[in-house]
Image (cartoon, rainbow, N blue to C red):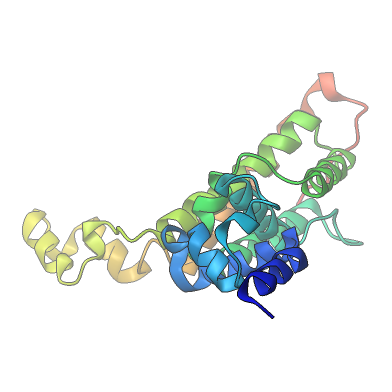
Length: 236
């Protein structure tokens, strides 16, 4: 078989799913900046123009990758007997795990321009479940958005190649010399006792603060006389 025939065979055997899977595998190896259409075509053993049969632009491919990252975390309403707090905490942890499996994943999802109809419908089902648990549609959307933005922002910081100067080797000694309290400075004590602001304990602290804030906002709404008669929340 000629090279031209082999290329044609590879091109016709491709579909959007196989291209996305190959792109995700390449992302793990080279990161977002190294993910070029030429490298992806080489990985698929086709010429670059073959990719445009399935994705009209690189942004369209990145949107499909963002969709994959989001859906890999699992979407859907609460499980039987699950409170909204338990459900959303589970969703947040699954979403974070999905993003942490790939370098630069937070950049991809935050820069996505369009998600698939499947993801959009699943998201609408989740909002409907929140409304059934006592949220109104706006509050449900704002709650999900706040939690999603928290995860995205935290992982952007984790995945960034730039770190605050306080995280550099030997920087604590420099800070001790800079601060009038020396090693007893609150900043240095915080690092000594709490570790990196990007660790698991820091993530859980922020998540708990957000969840408690959402619960307080929901309780204020259900305590408002104007909302009487609506479904009560599953308060903690």
